[in-house]
Image 1 (spheres, one colour):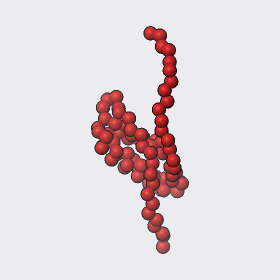
Image 2 (image 1 turned 30 degrees about the vertical axis):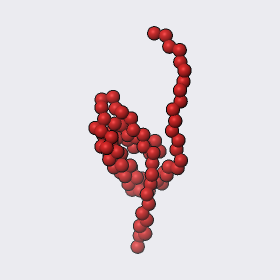
Image 3 (image 1 turned 90 degrees about the vertical axis):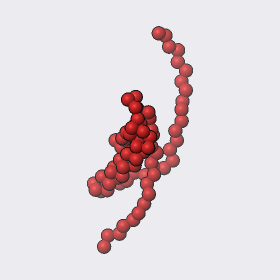
Image 4 (image 1 turned 135 degrees about the horizontal axis):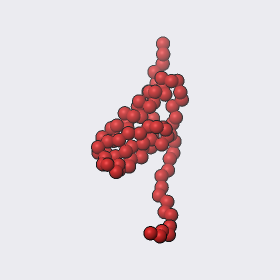
Length: 84
């Protein structure tokens, strides 16, 4: 009999406003895991589905599921002299 273990995986998601409208969402810890939505709520729903499909794909291929631990995000300012 196969043992079933329920586990919750958590990942950082970055959302960006798309130039054409809507939002682009990506998961840095899962390369290639990204999606978009016409609004923030749709982008969030879509990225949850994308993560689930990504993890299911890893399980099917018997690959290790990468867990994300602590991540930090910041903004760095860089002074520049520009001539136009």
